[in-house]
Image 1: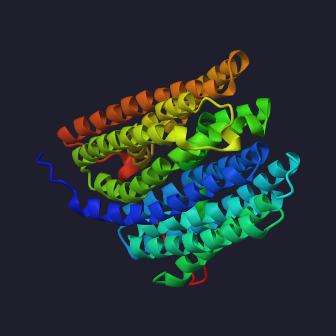
Image 2: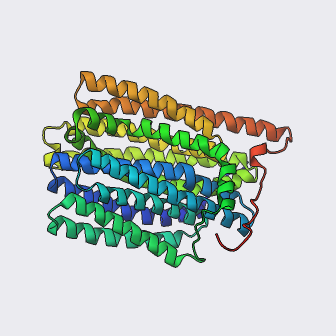
Image 3: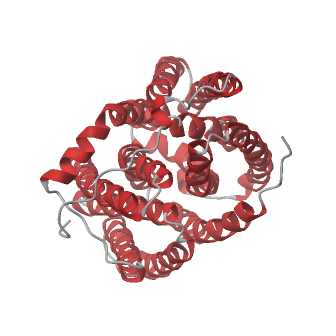
Length: 437
């Protein structure tokens, strides 16, 4: 099969990364500013709130955003797209509300005065994340970029005001971030080609329940992914305290742009590859997986080298006495595998193999928990990153193994002129009975 370089995808990627980049720049600048304003404990609490935001995004991604992107990409008519949009939109509101409440409760138990503000921030961030993915699935990248710009400008202005004038900087920064996310949501709603609709009526609930057979494994995968990916923060902060996690968080946040870029790749490629797989273009899907993995892997190595170069020049009370070079090297060892297993994970997800993804992340979580706990007992907290790196490597190897195995099975079936796997027969949901969603 002749491979044609996907120029149209590259153009879409540039547009998507533009929006992601301005958000990333804002988050990066905010973290650097807070490093010099907050105490080590205060910055540690801020980092934990960001971790909870990441947990919220992972559940939104697994239970609403990714399924919406996949099923909307497979839909062959507007009724199917709209039905899935409404169904997963309602589920996103529920999941975002739960994550906001859970964050507020955790921060309250930790004794932080800004618990309500942190909960509002995580809930609004999670909901905006779902909406961005849904708009990408509808190929409305320009609308998302405008929303990202509005979020960034509003967030930067309000966060700067909070840092320079508020008596409780951390609490007001959380409120500023929450308000900026709400502004981003409002822009998406205002510029949407059609009015956005959210429904919790019985037909919508039944449609989501029918999809739950597959989604429950996606939810389980989100749980194990959070354990595998966030156990470092939770164990270090829980055992050694937020101040001990502060230098690790301060270095890891420098790698946040890699997560932003990876999210842009996912938002760009998941609908495209779902459509290709729906057309039984298995070889094209696998070629894209290998090509973009190579791009992301090399990019993460170059970016990591740049961070290691500038890291010694960063001065902050949160980094006082920390071995920043060791933390930086171990952070690179964590993020390169993450960037390399994004594509095989997308392949497994568009094949509906959520159970396989769950087993992979469970294995990574078990390895990570054990190694991090051992390293915390015998070494200083920064060395716990080594356990997290081994965990990510386990996920990397297993993801490529199972993705390759499933692709080979599909190619063999295609060569025997078999019909498509049952899970890939296109089925459209019946449109809602009334116009009220």
